[in-house]
Image 1 (cartoon, rainbow, N blue to C red):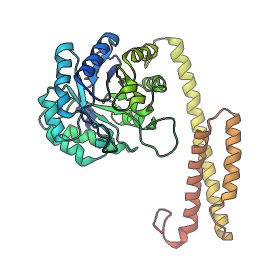
Image 2: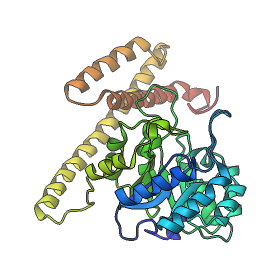
Image 3: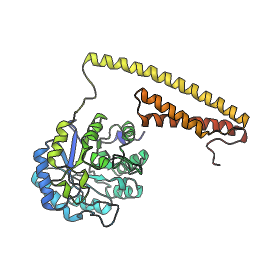
Length: 372
């Protein structure tokens, strides 16, 4: 367990406990565009907590628009001074930090491409030494929980006492409906490890398109995330970056109006009693599952001994293909999702292979984990 949660100021992002909304354009393109977006958001989205805008944009290809840089900072200062909206921007190095602090930016955030590099995070942490400004940290592009936690630890050691995490999904090379796979189990594990750190969701970068924003936003809130960051532009189709994932302030208001904000607990006695009954049943089933799994692995060891005595290979592809086919058919009939069922049985099969491998190699003096 990290020590961050014990010294981070709790609830700094939402003192009233209400869901946080952070919105603004992917990129600050012009003073007129920034002011127009900010004015619309202030009028259309009363829940707005921070106005965001990209000043420096780390892009994959060098010919892409990489932001207006320092030229955009006075535009954001004007939003803060004239409209009273706190400002947050992304910083990726020490020079960005210096310029942002000089411009009076209220909150900084580290992007996924920065979080993935401990050297870059440390450079930013060093630049923030002695400056207690709030900092939000997006998850790294690869699904590495410890790297995400480590970035916040580096900032905490520099004296930052107001930290937040932003879940923006993880890069994938496979075919997906998402630009970045949510992999919801990772932010859930972050909440377990750092329960006092505010966690918000960036559905814009998870989705990569407008059509999924509402569903992902609702999922995030249902998982007790404290809010959402959504890219908002007055004319998304003609934005200079990430056109497909930006929405107009009107559409953002519609998304927010349709969201259901659920409570963690209910005061209804009947609800709590029924919930406790269901939980007891789940506890019993889980206990049975563990016992059955232990019995299954004992049988796998017996199979290992049998194969060893008969000099039979551990892995038998035809048997595995037929087994997983039959298991998935049965699981589908019972209403279980194919991806879940396949992953579950692949994990079980992998552990069975490991146990049989350990049996096979026991007399040779090395374990299944030893390198060949």
